[in-house]
Image (tube, rainbow, N blue to C red; front, top):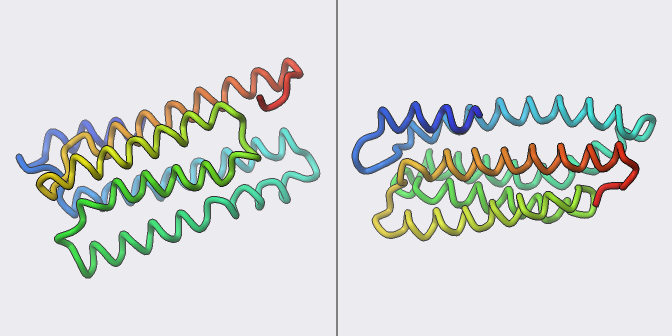
Length: 171
């Protein structure tokens, strides 16, 4: 919902050639907020589902995502700070990194998250392809991939939680 709201707000203020580096900074702030919200939810869910081993399970999950978060942050810092003319590559890179992190964590996640990982990979490659045509970012290049990706994640986790309650496991 936050991704779609930011995307809608930005579309109203975008220049005709798409996103600027300043618009991407707003997405970086939203990503930080999302990481905090997801981290809090992961911690609560892990304690509820895994009891005494929650800390171990949570850390194992975080180990899968930390490299992608650090790489995405470093790329953003380098590109926006030292090569601002190439900022148009960032959304595709970020979406691809999320896909890789999800695929690497797949053994620990419900099977339904495979669809989310595939979505982020397809979205990242699509954004690269479209953005490379004129080296700008179209208005949808952040809101749709992240908004749909997070909605798919929520639906997939909710479905897995229902199956777990019924005793069917993570499948």
